[in-house]
Amino acid sequence: GGEDGEDGGGGEGGGGGGDGRGSAVVPGTEDARVAAGILHCIDNMAHEHTTAHIVASAAAALGLSDRLQLHEADAFNPELPSTLAPGTQFDLLWIDLGAAHRIEGFFEAWWPRVRPEGGMVIVHSTLTNSLSRGWVERMRD
Image: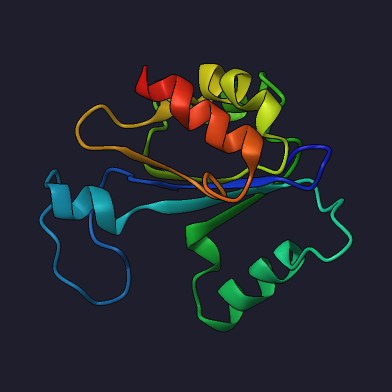
């Protein structure tokens, strides 16, 4: 998240073999890449009513701690993507940005991490937030 309590998250497709949960996955396949995926959640925990802090305990209760990387950081920090392992790409980048006036900078930093082969970006509050709505209109032009 950013200083205003925004958060972003992305599902990273990994490489390698099976998922360690008893399923048979052929190494080097798309299934293997997806099975080794990691969910990255970014939040600065500054929002008064955030629930982001319970994500780690929920993942542990589900036996999925190895699939979660929680970043307590400002998602608008342009250096944050460079702290990820080289080559890390996201199949899905879901963004809940309360500070839509900074969305262009966010995309400049994170867009290179969206997987070119079918990666998607979802932006929350594009109808109810006038700044986000303005960004969508500029993107359409």
